[in-house]
Amino acid sequence: MKVAHVPFCFRPDAVGGTEVYVEGLAREQTKLGDDVVIAAPAPATAAYAIDGLQVRRFATGSSVRLETLYGAGDRAASSHFGSLLDRERPDVVHLHALTSAVSIRLVDEAHLRGKPVVFTYHTPTVSCARGTLLRDGQEVCDGTLTVQRCSACTLQGLGVGRLGSAVLSRMPAHVGKACGALGLAGSLWTGVQYTHLLGMQQASFRELLSRVERVVVLCNWARDVLIRNGLAEQKVTVCRHGLVDWGDPRPLTVRAPDVLRVAFLGRLHPTKGADVLIRAVRALEDVKIELHVFGIEQGTADTDYARELGMLARDDPRIRFHAAVPSQQVIDLLRHFDVLAVPSRWLETGPLVVLEAFAAGIPVVGSNLGGIAELVTDGVDGVLVEPDYSEEWAQALAWLARNSGALASLRDGVQPPRRMSVVASEMRTVYDDLTGQVGAGGVARAASRIR
Image 1 (tube, rainbow, N blue to C red):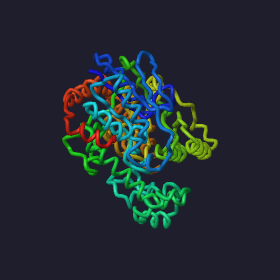
Image 2 (tube, rainbow, N blue to C red):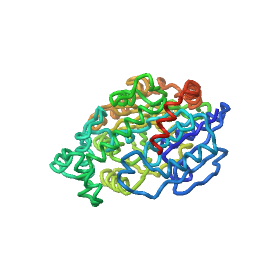
Image 3 (cartoon, one colour):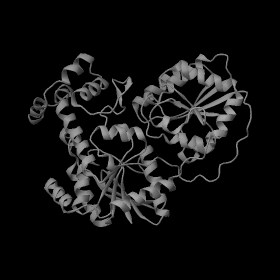
Image 4 (cartoon, rainbow, N blue to C red):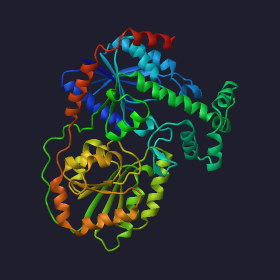
């Protein structure tokens, strides 16, 4: 079987967790005998290989029109993708993103050629315009898409005041559409158009859910969000994340530590909650503890947040900042720590680092939220703490620092995590079920949309 995986980008571009997942899955599928190609958008068409993995880049258009960004997607990208499909002739197309370049138009191109499409929901950014599934940036949202509520929340996140967000979120969509037709530009007019634009975006997302043959989610909360937004239950498959085989774990030296060594690995962004962790450690003046932050900065906002973290840590020698480490070195790094801390404020679909901690044989102190709570069993292989409460984090860390027996018990409870080879086998079952399911009706609908 030949599979075309379509992520947001791919190496040598800077990549994130989704692309790491895609590469790991592709390599494991290759081991199973499948023919795999990575098809990712780029400014220009290209073909190359990375460590034996075939990569094909399809060119995107130059249009930056708002209706392209929020609506059905980039026509030029879909046309080039269609040409790629004609050259590569995959049996299944597997989308891992939803953007103007990786849009529902790509589904049309696949269906026009009789190919089934699988879509994997990797992060809240796929459905949530704000990107975090945190309503007003504070509380976890149920993920149900409504234009007025989502417009107000997203505009507030973009810096529009509460009153302005409330007013603009009630703007009739036809008014915004008329402003767009007149070519009115600028931040004010974009705000006026926002209900129209977000309405298009949400409609495209729901249409994607209805049109693809299968939707794969990495955790239960994501399945629930998609079903709330109209996805038929029989079309969704829960297939949890896995790690590329890491070999046999080296035994840890079991000890009663005189200092609790805590690691944080991840993006330096407020949703990841590193500030909560730093506040917790600073509150433990009489506790022997070290916090090592291995942070990733992906833009100006992350750099600003990293600066805030440095100021928050001030001159506390127990809190140390380090550069990010390559993904292939994470497990060995974690073997040198007692626990991994994952204080996320948002709904993780993994996160992968929890599995890496388990592969290293260490327990996790994590937020009692989303995918973290689905992976960590409180009191068995870790401790679950309410997110965004530094006092509770301080209590949990102090308890582990002062109770070597509890820490040893949690370490004993850690089991080897799921492997990506298992994910590849389960995905192959999904593909086998779908092959040949795109009938004449799907081809006809695709042809009418493309015209």
